[in-house]
View 1 (tube, one colour):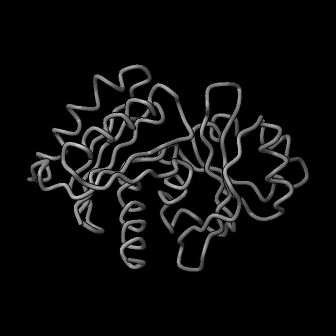
View 2 (view 1 turned 90 degrees about the vertical axis):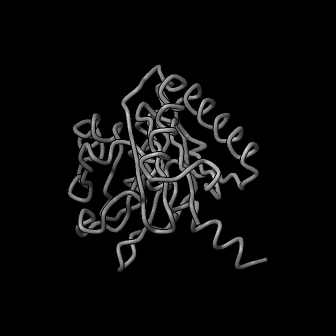
Length: 218
């Protein structure tokens, strides 16, 4: 199944095309205010680089947030238009889940829980909790939440497990989070810049999982 993934929910705009588990092509651009201008050329570039045409795309996947309102609106509107024109399925993917799924198994270390964070730009942060399996895959164990940095710290402390916080927000506020966690700071580690934002590569893979599950129930 060939899936086109779109992510404009953060300041990293990304597009990817995957054929099953093989990501054929991907592109990304840091773009705080140019989501609309960047997206269409990126879609055209990625499809061409994958040696495909839009007519060969079988599903469209898009990050539906949380994130930047204007960016999400651009991505969702573009994905809806493409899906309608091509007559294919449209799959919405939670950005926090996509960010958690982006963590390579080798980067998890001994952590028990991955905590993806996304800055909502309203003096608040969105986060969720994902258990790390023996095979390195992550499974959601708590629904997404939006709150202050203090609320995030409380959620980590209440979890009482080794937590790997990822996302630009967590990395930028790492020192403050460590101080606020206090005596439990030993159980908190942080991802590097490569895990600052969700990416369309992960969006395509999660969409394929969702589509295969839907087909298995038909």
